[in-house]
Image (cartoon, rainbow, N blue to C red; front, side, top):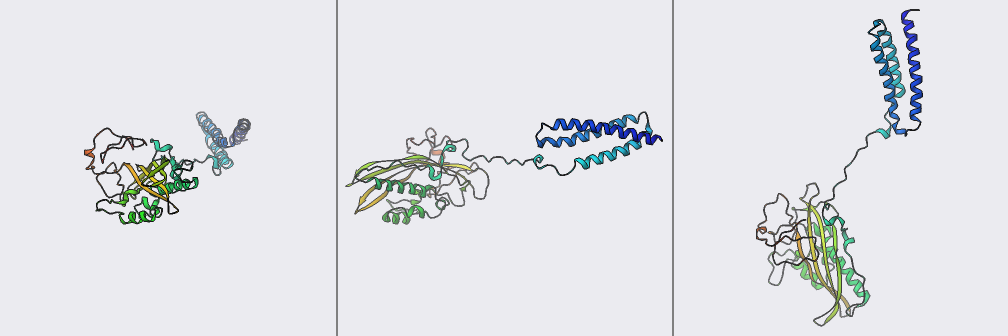
Length: 338
């Protein structure tokens, strides 16, 4: 028997012994592990081959003649190990792409906990009031709620379009007046630009950054008797919080807070129920410019040119999220936050 044959026989015996021990150890280790961790088996097999490489390297110090045959045998074993443990990576071991949760534009403000859209427009339970039946009061409350939604949530109106959603809910006489003075930049005495009765973002200056509009507030009613009429007087006090940005831009946007207060009277006349807004969409808008007087909401962005009216603001900043704050005489005041 040649030296090479003897070397091959010893090598086969050595690797066979290592493989048997390694296989038993691996099977014992795997018995209690979840399946997805078994990709470690490939590492263990390669580690066994690495031990042999080190052994071969040490042997060469004493018997250089072993290097070639051991190398050939090791190459064959290594290739076999790759075939036995190769193949595609199991699906459960592939990296899972993680998409970060988008941060809400209302995060960090009270609006985060407000209801969304019409869900925030609450109505009290209807009862017979001021000579009106419970059914009449319920109808008046629903009409008022619908007008609030048309004023502040209608997408066409918000985008600066013609506010037909509100117009069709108004009594015929009031509808004619509303549409006649819409966008009237030079109203006659006793008239005003009725664009102020709705919330409309200035075209080309702003768009909604999200479809979510946060709403918080309340509706109340009581009996009234004025000018020979009796019925129910409905008062509304709501906050509408929008996230807006310049058209075409991306990102969370800036918050605009519309504080809307109004008064609606409901009464019967000539056998029909009349629901008539007396005061509508009063209050204030926070986050908008004070120096533009066209009825539209012009957001004040971080890089906007200075507001000419802001320098005239006096007094302590107001909290725009406070529903019951006292109104101020100034046209433009400071706010503590948006």
